[in-house]
Amino acid sequence: MSSTMNFDVPPALVEYLARLDDFIEREITPLQNENDNNRFFDHRREHSRTDWDNGGLPRDEWEDLLGECALRADKAGFFRFSLPKKYGGQNEDSGRGANLWMAVIREHLASKGLGLFNDLQNEHSVVGNFPDVIMVQHFGTEQQKEELIGGRLQRKVRITFGLTEPGHGSDATFMATKAVKQADGSYIINGGKMWQTGMHKATHCFIFARTSGKDGQATGITCFVVPRQTPGIKVESYEWTLNMPTDHATVSLTDVHVPASCIMGPPEGGLAVAQAFVHENRIRQAASSLGAAVYCVNQSVEYAKRRQPFGKPLAANQAIQFPLVELATQCEMLRLLIRSTATSMDKIPHIEVEHKLGDKVSMCNYWANRLCTEAADRAIQVHGGIGYSRHKQFEHIWRHHRRYRITEGSEEIQMRKVAGYLFGFMGPKKEVVASKL
Image (cartoon, rainbow, N blue to C red; front, side):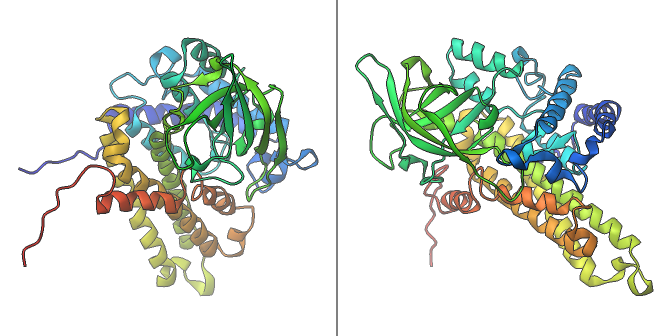
């Protein structure tokens, strides 16, 4: 008996996208066009966003504009879409807010190109993504939920994520940061973290530290929720990146003293906290990269039909057609894989995703990010000189999405996971059938 899958987007989701587009047109586009706010999106974008005389941090005017956009989206009922109802979202309404819906929404917005409605350099969107809220929801105490989730949604709390270190990235179980338990049950943390995004405005830090065990062991790592102003936390530098501005801090931790009540999640089981939202985040980010790739392909096709070197359309040349044909084909195939994977994720409990679908999520994510950078590079080539300029969005898309081939799990780490499932040394156990010769 064969099984079939319906790849049609649910009618309710189609209607939701139409309402979202209408909101953007009525509320967000006019805001972007006010007070020369377009300077943050046109060829002046990197300079307008970056306070070069303040360590390369984001300018206040830029972050204030993003905040105003988020407030309007929240008032209209879009911003918290993916959150549970009790936090103002729609996550429990017949699949709304689930992985398929968010994947379709993220692709849809990214395929429109760069704008105030969706600027992934800051993980900003009129439909918000809340990995920190999900972590606290699943692992926080009632007091932590009230303080952190409530404060986050009221824009009074901002949390950084301290897992990566100067000497350790993908090998998180080898982290050098240590937390030593004291006689009174409190802890003293020493070590350092790197790429702590948002540190310049942070009120709290999620600090992961080894509290027991040996290097390489998954157990023995604990997550601490540490107020930013706790003595001993020092920003050593903000790392300038390919796509400025930066808010990515390198932080030292010297005798940071915290009570046991700062622990979030199971003591010694902090990696579960770190991985709480990783699959949802990866599938959504894959959808965004797909959308940006679609934008690059569509813009290139339209330009090639208009441009007429030597008296005929650029699109008449197979050297232009074939690379775009390959990219368009890959976009179509990737969309099906993303939506199929997202649908499967929606059918099983959250804790089973890693075991049953971890390989598919990694396939979606690493390939989408690579495809996006290839599409942006091809768009630059098709557009020629103007494509290389900042008057087009392709260089910005390339610079930003190139980052995703490293963050959220590097390509190599994700391919290693796929290999583990493929060859049977991780994931669901596969029945090995010996071939008879």
